[in-house]
Amino acid sequence: MTTRIPARFAKCAAEGRPALGIFTMAGDPDFATGQSILDALPAAGADIIEFGMPFSDPMADGPGVQMAGQRALAAGQTLRKTLAMVEAFRSKDNDTPIVLMGYYNPIYIFGVEPFLAAAKAAGVDGLIVVDLPPEEDEELCIPALNAGLNFIRLTTPTTDDKRLPAVLKNTSGFVYYVSMTGITGATIKSHAAVGEAVRRIKHHTDLPVAVGFGIKTADDAASMGRDADGVVVGTAICNAVGNSLENGKATAGTVSAVTTLVAGLASGVKRAKAAA
Image (cartoon, rainbow, N blue to C red; front, side, top):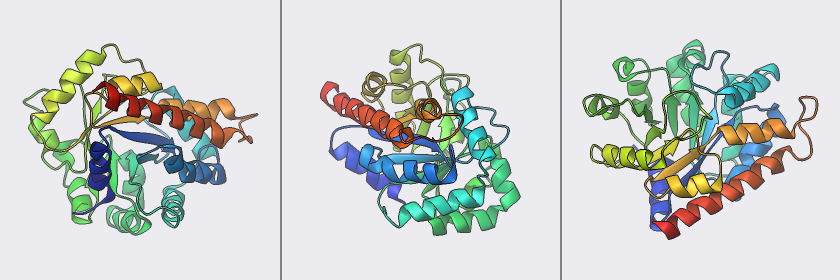
């Protein structure tokens, strides 16, 4: 299977730094502004884009990501529109990996096989579906792999050495290490413990390991990037969008609020190179 993800991690590793993954919610705060944000991410410094599929019951998301999803749904975002946004992005950028991230319900309603075909055709590289455990791999993971999409699995501080092989069995692209138990946007209590967990996962897989949840600043990105192959930032991006709005609507500063933050985070992962 060939997607854009391994090449991007290899490129970042050749530069001696971790990859910067940026999560943004599709259609937040509206379709046009969401497209502008998506299109602007690579130039701002994003190496990999995690594109959120809005869902009405996002059980693992903190308030920032939940509100982003609610804004997108209120503006009429659908899974079909999300795929159209990826397709529009691909007309300008054929190199930056895009991973759709969210929950199984919208995919199930769309239909697994039609969704996978449409996602591949649009230019999607991989999926992160947080509510499908390895025991449900036949439901979406195996069909996704057969369709040529990476299926990226989450591991957490509670994923012990006994559980890890099952989690990693059909994982491809990279492994996403959730830095804490709980929801997105909380604060990392121990950077050292995260580094130790990343090293433990690397004993079980040759795949790159990216760390997400709780990374908010360039300093966080620099610190986490010393041990990980990638760092992922989401809540801070969603909050930047939310804080830029007036009466719930996009302003002239909405896109730049995101790109300025991403540029700062990109400087952080470059500092991880110097400190490693």
